[in-house]
Image (cartoon, rainbow, N blue to C red; front, side):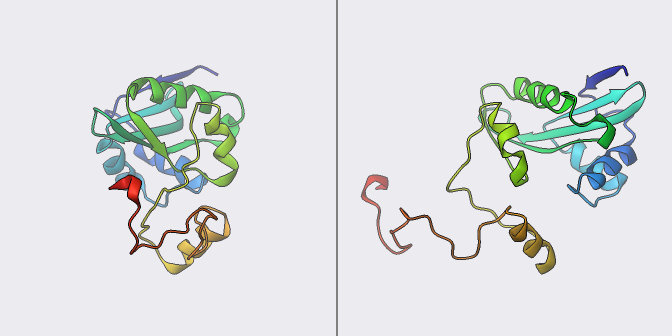
Length: 165
């Protein structure tokens, strides 16, 4: 096993990237779709074993203060041996000095906490997807139930919060 990381977007077998992300359940896009997604990203990191892509990750960013990490995934036989940690550390170096957000599946929370990530209580999102996909995301803990409120959320949308005025 001769693993190395690359940030190059040139001469990439995007079908391999699509296979990895599809297998990990992170995307259903084909190679052409992944090429567009990754080439439009601020930075990408691909893990290679020789000529074969075995893992990937990417970030979008304004290049100054805000970034988001997406699509961290490896082929099954390359999981659990520390490569994901190396890839995330590399991305964090490339995004140094920026505030970084990411989404992960619920079992991945503790993995990202090891890098200094904290859970965000007030994150909001709009997902473009079918009712079935959104229901699956709720069932697997990605989204809180509709109307869910934390116990300290006693201020209604129509009320003013003095400390924010």
